[in-house]
Image (cartoon, rainbow, N blue to C red):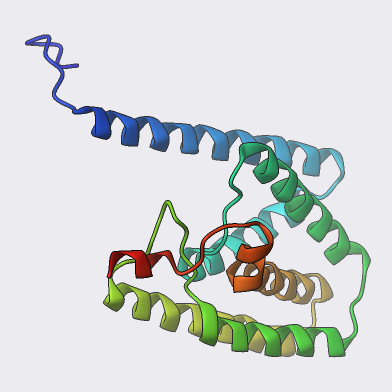
Length: 188
């Protein structure tokens, strides 16, 4: 509402977009605060932060599935950002695990990244290509780091960030959750 003239300068659609954006920010921040608080209680705060960063760097370019309901988002985020850091700290995975995840990830990123959503279709073909190239480059960097670095925690974090993002871009995952895939094709 314009405070000077008392008139509304936004139409209903614009107000809905603003409301949706604010709700998204609120839900994201509240989830992050709760999950990081629980991770701190479990003694996994630094690990949870590291995993969030590594995962979200990949997610920024490969995109992928989003939960259709807030409850599912809470459940999947809690499992992902609490269980995975716990596993990364407490389990030393064999080299074969890292190799298999790396191969599957690289192939999946080449074939399926970026994976859009119905609410955020990636319509622009040029942007899709840029995101694909960046996702492949980033996954290649992660994979290279996995085999160069000696720190087991960091190696595990990189591997699981790749694995989680790979799961979220696969067409089968969209099918399992009954969500539409390749949403950009609806705009051709």
